[in-house]
Length: 192
Figure (cartoon, one colour):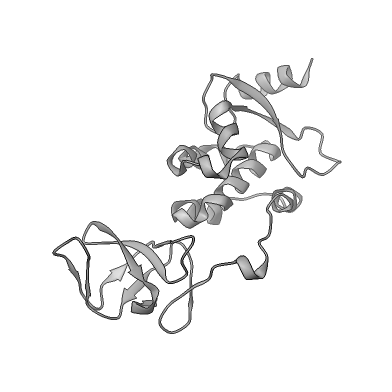
């Protein structure tokens, strides 16, 4: 039996990440340890394209990881963990990462594929007191803020839950106030 036949049998001929059953191909997990027997998964063209090109990533497509992260197949767990890690600034992937369980050696395998950014390239978001803000945190407004393009005024003391980070600007975060998604300057918030 070939590797592809084995993977098709294991996955019931569906993408092991999103469940799609069209345009399936074998994908070898990068940075796999030598002792792993099967370091490949069966994935669709959509998943493959987004894994290979971070610019093409559509976060909502990856909500499927809510199911695939519970796979008993280590290679599927590794790829699920890596994609959740890549998307964790969206907020919801961090919740899944917090729930995900992997054996220690599988987690080491997953971490081997994460490229650590050099210290000078890392953008750190800090609140008005200097506390580090991470995706999914709750913050409180320290000042009344007029929302541009709207008649809404976000009042001081308003809690903004599950904020997301603006990737290229350490002084901005995003969150919902009165049902409206807004950009907030970090100097006007305090982390709870």
